[in-house]
Image (tube, rainbow, N blue to C red; front, side, top):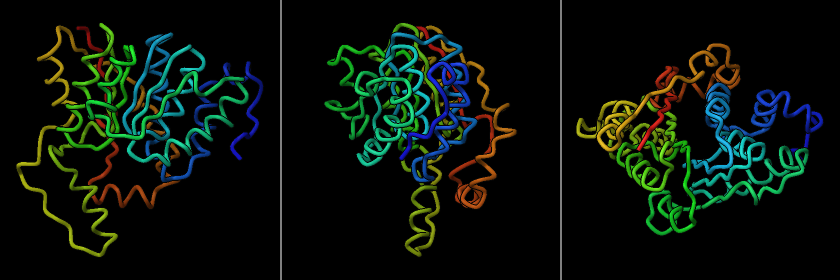
Length: 269
């Protein structure tokens, strides 16, 4: 179903970025939540920083899983993903198996571990990496979209991460502290219920500012590193293809076309 022919293994490796988007664009909208530009910017962070023979994690899986697992196969890495929806993991496994693993002659189980549970749980969340003897080098965070949850994830990740590690944030411009009222109101609209006004106490600084401050207080060196999202976003057909949906997301405060949507940091312990 997803084993459309792109080319030989050598052709895939030579045209790797094109292949990432080729595979991503097979995904239906419900699991294709990040723009092509963000997916490609994430993939370039992995390449530019030469992340090989290491572990990568993500919270909230989808199109980002395509970029992470593809990179893992080419560079002998291990990806561990958390999502509370087990159907997403099963669906992505079928896509990755057919579209990526088959032409690359790879076993998905050697490169990807999907955990259908809360990423902040002490027994099955990110903290379990210590028990698994895994020291991740990069974490991509795109799950509940509240500051409290994000800090809990990054705190658990940084405790078991390598001495030099990377934090990459989706929707880093969000300002929800305890609850994601944008998402709540989107679902209330579907139920034909009125929107709830967000209390001032739930508003924080944009995540990229809060997280940079949190990391700076904990580690000796924190650097916000440049990525290609802003440049790639300019010509991203994703925004045109999903224009109607994107308009509603902007209206509900769930999305915004800004360079601060996708932010990356390099940290030294």
